Length: 403
Ligand SMILES: O=C(O)CCC(=O)C(=O)O
Ligand SMILES: [Fe+2]
Image (cartoon, rainbow, N blue to C red; front, side, top):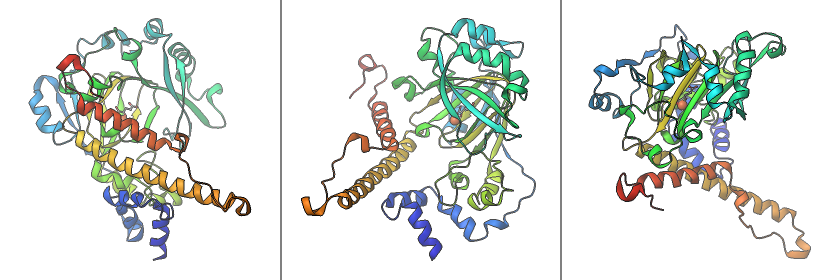
């Protein structure tokens, strides 16, 4: 009972955010706790065998088949032969290597987000801490690429056994170069309401071998498609219904990657579902020229097995819009409860801070925009976006948006 009480207090922030508790029940994270309390330690830790992702070829996969077999049932797949005729493929892939000189000459002045990770040993996911993101010109990134990435481990990047990697990620290439036709959106992904409305969920990724993306599910439960122009990536994917296995027992911290060190006793206690997650995860190595379809709400990690340049879009349509809405509703509920709790806490602290002899105790609680936390700002931004998507009328009245 004591444990139950403690978990309740932690999940609900001492009973002030009941929605936090509901959320854990709704998405099944409560099961992670069950693993800890009732036999989580006994799960077989034998050989790991991952589930396989279908590999298809665009020449033998009709759009209707893609919809029936992957989009509608929300299952992943790899599709070959979609990059034919892409300038990205002919210009940026030079005999299997990323053509850094071309990239620099054409786009060097643009700025892009770059994630810096420090890794120790072979833990390429950079340990527990999140990568630091900053903006860098493509030219500066190219200089780093030339002088550092090929001799990883050499003096400059080595700090007492740790190494530093830079991953150029989420570069909104089409926003920076709207008239440059680097690629064409494959027909399978043409029903894309997110980019028809917002237009900015289209990215270029460039990272040397060993750069990676930690465990996450894509924004607003969107789908993603990602094509390798150069290089190879290893993906691990986990079904939405297995999400709880990836969280700590308190349902708060998402594991950074599937192979998070469980030999460390504390990790094993904190992430009791992870061993099981490894048994229900899908693994696939995506080769140059292949495109992966990542379904909605599937958590995934990505590792560049070679120097890799990829192009990806996040997208939404009628098949996954309901899932986005459900997720957003939960986020809104959580953030409004948190706001209420913050206001109450502020009320109590104002009351305690006030001089009871001069004003009778306590100040009225006023809510300023600054009191909104990041979650709630994010949720309201997402809500506006979702509204725009629903109100969007393709082809109608100049594709005008209803506000
Ligand atoms: O390629 C990567 O590093 C991450 C890509 C990703 O997460 C996605 O396409 O959804
Ligand atoms: Fe992703």
